[in-house]
Image (tube, rainbow over the protein chains, first blue to last red):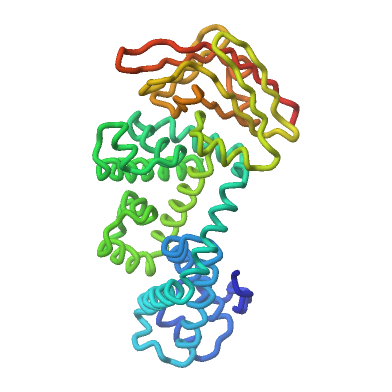
Length: 196
Length: 179
């Protein structure tokens, strides 16, 4: 389970977001509370993305955010970040270490959580709004035939790249490349529809 | 490193970059607001695709759907038959189980027309269960605005070693309760 939010969520309006990492670190070291909230706002989403990809579950990603941001905050407060201009690298390094520890120490627990998360996802009815579904379908309809088929078979029919390749007479590597290209086009199309 | 293209973001999201490229992307996005935004959008897109119900369901997807609450409505239909499914209210999702002789079949193609015979959509090489002789078509309450959906005229074409042949025509009537 995700730990309780442990960071002050004070308004950051008076804390300019264009502060450099080094400036932000200096303010945190001087115990400026709003700087701590700004630091959290800057990096939490990045850590969460990393956690979603490497730990493959939202609860585990939430835990990672809490653990990493606590370590980072304590290090910055204590002036233990050797080169504050490389704060982003420090946060990423901490992410990697904590992820490794989480996997090693709680492998079994994480497997259980992942399985539970997968089960939860599998028994939930489709939760997208009608607008989202229609938007996505329109963008899928604009894909070239082969890319649409690869997306359909990969994501909607849960087939592996090897299975899709066998159906379409392509190598698994080719299927992956087509899939990446199709996702890039879908993402661009959805951005454009959102903006219009 | 300049911002990687969206195909690289997609490959990273699907865990299909090699370790070196994956590490390089992570080094970059931790210091790049634009790439964080792109990666977050890509993650959302993949989640949406995985949550999207395809028109024609695999048996695995059908089983998962049957485990949801409220349990989806299902209607069986045989070649030459007309049947009706009712959606809305407590039944937002349903599916048609179209029966057909599919033993030994290698591929099934699906085509839908409206009541006047005008083509609506066609899907090649759809999932099917040869042993049970079934093709499962999903429908959702928000299809209510799709043109021609009230009376969908579906035909299935099967291909095996002997060639292609029609294996079933079905008239699938949809009735939607008011939202």
